Image 1 (cartoon, rainbow, N blue to C red):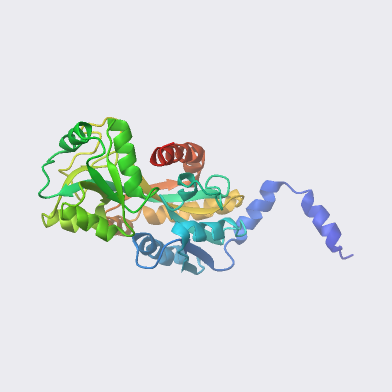
Image 2 (tube, rainbow, N blue to C red; image 1 turned 90 degrees about the vertical axis):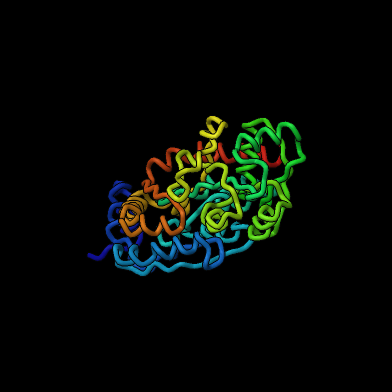
Length: 323
């Protein structure tokens, strides 16, 4: 005798939830996966997403399609992903400050970075570098810090606005070194860097890839890198902590994320495959070209640390807003 739809649903309801999810995972994926990038094509985030799309497609035997969804400082793309079905078919490649931008804003957030997302895998870290003009009198980070102590708010730094990685880097440096400097805001990073080259702004904190050619050509002087360890691209440049600000560490990360409530077996499948790709020699070579550090981490430790990570960046955002 054929069962009615209601009888089937009642029978399913009596099965263990783990069993249902496992069966779901075995069928995953059965259609293309969309990988959202909340910035324009050609950016470092976009290039990284496209690097992963091809090998991930092969490993999962389904197309992985990159979709650029820029706008509103990343909010547009992340909001769209947060509202997507939690089925593993919509992911986002997230980086600070795009993903955590609601923590830095006084306006009502359109999504909650912790409650609306779940981490899938981390693949890389992007430390920043503090630079001054080649003609600057500040030859070390200690020189710069002492100058800011001697002349509070007279020295300036450039950024592309409150909440940007450069601004957060500077705010944390001023807070931990008990100094003050004035933030000069720009619409885009290129001009903000060139005004440091020209001596119109005292210093800036930027992604290493963007300023490395200017450092190598002698137009900028690197004082310190912001990560926990030295950069392979600038091995002779100390970390901020080594240069006199103990405990300082700030680097953006690149995480694949999914909507909250995505089933754990699906997260496991995606996490395992993405981490395997991040551990390949090809990705290591890619990171070297992008001046990034490989940091392959699965979803479980990321999920456990998610509240702490958000709290850390929220505090830095509060410092940036002067609260």
